Structures are given as structure tokens and as C-alpha cells.
Amino acid sequence: MRGFSALARRPGEGEPTERQPFPHRRGLIIVTTLATAYMASHFFRAANVTIGLDLMRDLAIGPEALGALTGAFFFGFAAAQIPCGFLFDHFGPRRTVAGMLVLATIGGAVFTLAPGWPILLTGRVLMGCGFGVMLIGSMVVISRWFPADRFSTVTAMVMSIGLLGNLVATTPLAWASQAIGWRGVFGAAVVFTALAAVAVGLVVRDAPPGHPFLARTPEPPRQMLHGLLEVLRNPRLRPILALNFCNYACTFTVQGLWGGPFLREVHGLSPIEAGNVLLIAVIAYQLGMLAFGPLDRLLNTRKRIAAGGTLAIICILAALALLSHPPVWVPIGAILCIGFFSASSTMVMTHGRGTIPDRLIGRGIATINTCVMFGVACMQTLSGIIVGAFEPLSGGARSESAYRALFAVLTLVLIAAVAIYSRSQDVRPSDEMLGRR
Image (cartoon, rainbow, N blue to C red; front, side, top):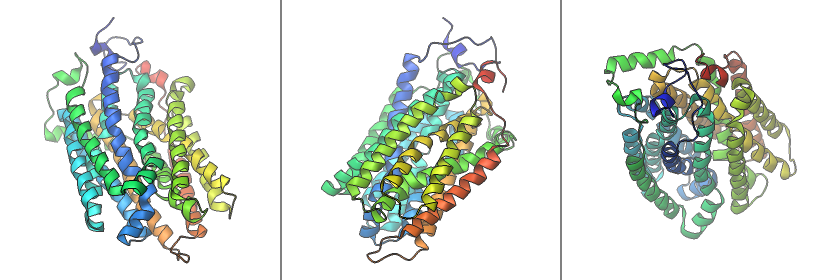
């Protein structure tokens, strides 16, 4: 059997590629550790969809402030991407992820103990910065420990495990927050994050033995900046970034912020009932991850899979925007279907990763993820403005018209993104394995 250096080598870089055992036990342990830590990121980013109305009541804030509070996590997340890309390429994933998880722990503690909205906002930004490394770190490790044609499958596995944190942020959070308050639940999540930082530092390794990264000479700052500019100038990446900016941003605006209030205010579901719908939607997302992950190898395309999944989401959002007073099963079914098809965002990221050379992997994935999270931050903030533009009904609830306007805007944004993305060049797994990119 060939050594780990052969496993880590990209096709076209050295001797010809042959199929490697999948997955390698040590690599799988490392990736599982990162995926488990990733659960905390998903919990904190998605919690507002369940406790959003409680925060608005407890802090006497409106939908605009809630949207800004939710978006603050993603502004912090986006701001950390490029700096962390440099850190990954210079110091490696283990030290970078462990250190940033310490920052996320501090942010979670600030949020949990905050007496008012401004300090809550500060805590959310710090959490976003700290958790901003998780997906990039996992993808960098996957790129070095697994063959190129397994990248999408293993990335989907990491995201599927991470989504368990999103599951906890639905019905379990609704139940626990009613029992002990949301601050008590968040305190437990902060402790989990601290333990995850320790686990990453002890278990994760940057690359398998013999990998070129371990024998590298760290680049000077000027050369690292030149590499970032090389990523930004990549003409094949630009149309992909348009869909990266919009796909997850639009679906998470429903799944991670307004889906729960929509079901409660417009369709009369209780907090637990809305939480149950969101929980099942997360399970649908996990199933979507498992379904979309290996499709690129089965169909030998990434572009068509990503575009097809996004077109399905467009149809669902358009139906929510056009239908007035539908029976309750329609919005419930729509939210569940959005959960499943939103997994197509993983294929968009895999498509983008396929345009980036290995020596720029940290900065390249950081650039992609910056686009994703900045899109979420902008859309969360914009969504609060859209919903807040409509006069509330008696009792303070938002009208169906407010939510239909939001769904219409999301539909139009995704249509524009797919139109730009259609100009991209596909990156097929078969070409990668033959060294053609």
C-alpha cells in the first residue's frame, strides 16, 4: 500500500493516482472531532429562529433589531474568513481552529451573561468570528487526508454531523428554554464549546505523515497576500461566488430566522409545534447532505446538481410568496422541502473548491466561505428591514403580507444568482482524478 504522501497528492502532481482506502481510520477520527465541534457553531447560529420572539419580548426590540442581532454572527463569521485563511496556510488547522474556538467560547459567555441588546450584539460578533474557522478547517483537513473525489462526500458528512447542533436549536431548545430559560441552555453550550477547543488541540493533525505541508517553508506575508490576490483574480471562481453569496443566505433566512415566527404568527403554531417543524426540517437538511454529497461522483457533474437544487428552492419560495392563506400543511411542507434542497449549497462550495490549487487551499476556501457568510449577514439584516416595514397587527404579530414580501425578495435574489452561475465552467470529479482542472 502506498504511503500517506500519495494519498494527499493531487492528481497530476507526481505519480499517477490510484484508488485509496476510504476512509482512513485516523483521518476519520480527526474529521469526526472537527464535525463534533462544528455542532456548537450550528447551534448558536440557528438558535434565534426558536427563541427570536422571546428575545424580542425580553429585550423589547423589533424585527429590525432581531435581524441585525442574527446577522451580527455572520458579519463576524465573514470578517474572520480571510485572516483565518492566512492562518491555515501558515500555522495549520489544528492551532488555528483550537485558538478561535477559545474566542467563540468567550463570545458565547458574553452573550449568555449580557444584560442588554448592545452586549448581546458584541457576544454574537465574537461567536461568529470564533466559529468562522470550523468549516474552512474541516475542508482543509479533508483536502489533505482524503482523495479529491471524496471531498464532497466527506464534507457532507461533516456538515451532517454539525447539523446536530441545529437540531438541538429547535424543539430541544424550545423545551429547555421554557424549563430553565434560554440563558441556562446557552451556558451549557458555552461549556461544550470550551471542551471542543481542547479536543481539537489534542486530536486534530494538520496533514498525514509525508504530506508536503509538514515540510513547507512558511510563506512571507507579501507572498501570502499575492496568493490571496491570485484567488480573487480567478475568473473561473467569480460566477460561482454569486451563487455562494445567495444560496445559503436565502435558505438560512427561512430556516435560521423567520421560519419559526412565520409558523407562529401567521399559522398559529405554538413554540413547541414550530420547533418540531424546524427540527424535522433540519433532519431533511441532513438527509439532503447525505443525498447530495455523493451525487457529483455518480453523475460526474457539480454545476448541474447545484443549479438544480437552487431551482427547486426558487419554486418553493415563489409558491410561499404567491399563495395567500394556504392550509397550514403547505408552509410546513415548503419549509421541510427547503431544508432538503438547501443541501445543494454544499455542492456549490465543492464546485468552487475545485477551481483552487492546493497551495492556496486555505485562502481559497476562506474566500468562498467569506462570500457565503457575508451573504447570510446581509440577507439576515435585509430580511429584518423587509418584515419590519409592515405595520404589525394587534398584539404585535407580523402580517402574512410581510412574510410573503420577504419570500418574494428571496425568490428574485436566487433567480439572479442562478443566472450568473449559469456562466460558470463545471469541474467534474472525473477530470480532477485525471489531473485536469
